[in-house]
Image (cartoon, rainbow, N blue to C red):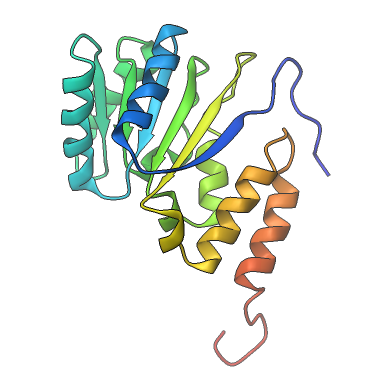
Length: 189
């Protein structure tokens, strides 16, 4: 098992919160004060523009990138490269950031409607932050705790519990327990 974290990395802190734009704004402020960068993940393309507008109103002097799969390849590349270079401090996107974006200065991840994602996907997305020695934070926002399904509660609980580096195997075991192993040899295959 590969469960040894890279040297000089610290575990990231995962917080589960009812959706509140002020809490999002506070998380952004903390990261910007550290001269860091922020990922904001939304579950629908139309929400990228909506959230971007609110963030621009709250942080008018901060350069913001937007990214989603309906953008042209050149526009998406321009936005992501602006974030990668540090020119843009906030990237608001859909789950296209799930793999392949490694920005060591981005140490805050905000996930809107975290209850709609699978455990493995959330774990992968959360891994976009905390790629350097600086303390990283992942904020999981949900509409309300009481509205969560039992399965969503289980997924989010696992993410809060396993925050230490190298915990991917443990998360995968819990994902299997929550979703079940499927039917490997049955007629559905």
